[in-house]
Image 1 (cartoon, rainbow, N blue to C red):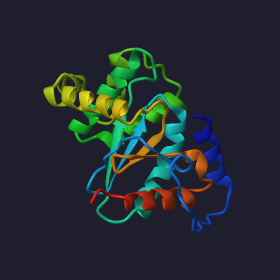
Image 2: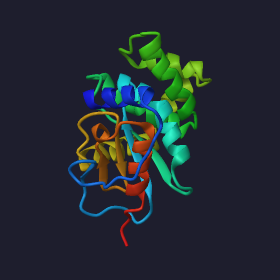
Image 3: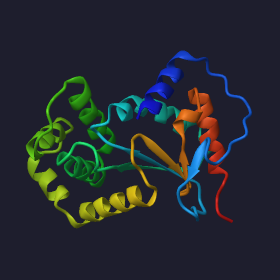
Image 4: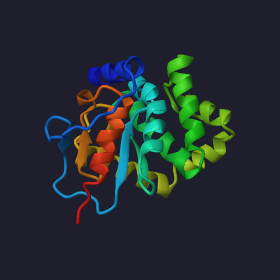
Length: 203
């Protein structure tokens, strides 16, 4: 995770000046799956417990704006941070997606954990954050225990295993390329690398 902290610091301090670059596997990105997608897509792996993910969020919004039209961006909450609350947070994210309040819940959850320093030790603590974005406890319970949410949890777990995600934030492009954030020094360079990888789709 240190490499992400260095990258974020560089993004803040260095001027925005992208330049042509030659991108190489093993340096700028890792190939984590033999066959990728036929359509351009981006999966962001994160955790509400990850402070670097919180700091990375506004930069990811800029990256989305700089990406070509039609690119599908997805988010995948991992379970390996937060000990026993890791799976609970992943469930909370999936429930927020089902209830169509994910952006609001994500902002509120990051703020609760990293700005307000509120402990997240059980499901009631999570429900309190949902209440802040207009979702009552009964509605949350219904969504959290639903078949669609259980399916999303299994898919997110499979994704983390398939793409060998061991730290967050992590970004996988076209279901094949894991970006090495330590290889870039600014938001311009990150966007240029991501946009290059988006062109590498399966024929």
